[in-house]
Image 1 (cartoon, rainbow, N blue to C red):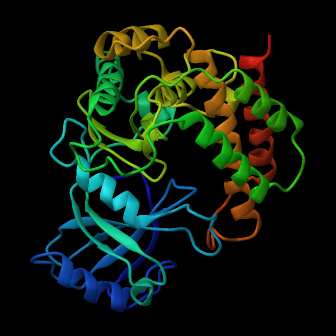
Image 2: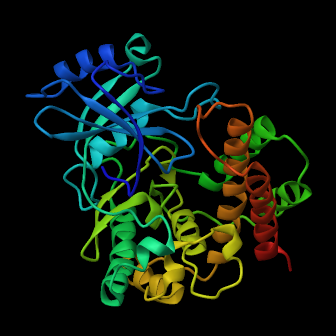
Image 3: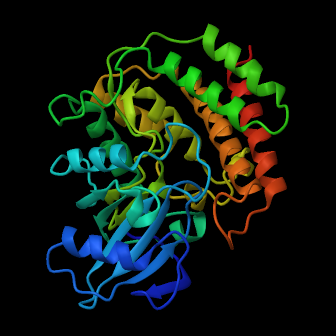
Length: 355
């Protein structure tokens, strides 16, 4: 797995310390889990995550891998389940959904203070922002946009039972379950009042559409969670929010992140990749998805509102973790700006639902 930038803070074997990695016991465990691994190992924290922590490590041969672990300190109940994430990525290996290969799961907290799992390192850019996206040719951006929606359709067309994920979660009542979950998380993370959150939650409840079928739902499907090359996705990342349920939730989420150049609302997603231009329109994505899956997207604004509301609840959790120092040292964040982004998400959700 690859990210665009890595921090300069590294550890070679046990010579230095890297927050979140106990080099000696982790190295011993990795040598048993990965065939032909040759220590010493050089670890580095990969930048770009507000939730689970992701590290790259390289052995003496130059072979590269990725280690994923929960954030440091307090985490919300049921969040950051490494075993669940490892199970999902492993189950999708060999499917039409591109994922990194997995090498093992460690559930013994004595090794690293928390569970972790290990994947192969897939080399390639991640389009975290419009600056990176602007380096792609227009033809490549258009092709990538179509591959993004094609892969999402392929994920939603998979039979969860056939790939071993039929017990990942309840298939029915996805939206009702999500509303309950994120209302709970919102209450657990709330540091101040945002009336739009409660008002939106009520409207989401009263306007809830009927769920038609159930699919594997990624939960965080956007360009910033994809390693890409030559107009295609090499690996889809960050499966911690994956569950079973209404696939249109993924579509609404993707459309919210698919901002066109000059479109109002970009303050919700600063420097969003698609703002570079050259990507397919939302309408083109919807047409292609409907053609591939047969699903009706005429009510997609409900799912877009739900996505904004859910992201506001998630963002509040991130804000609180930074506020109390649970994301570790040397992690810069403009807390006031992040706090305001939660307000903006809640307002955007309400605007999509209000008459």
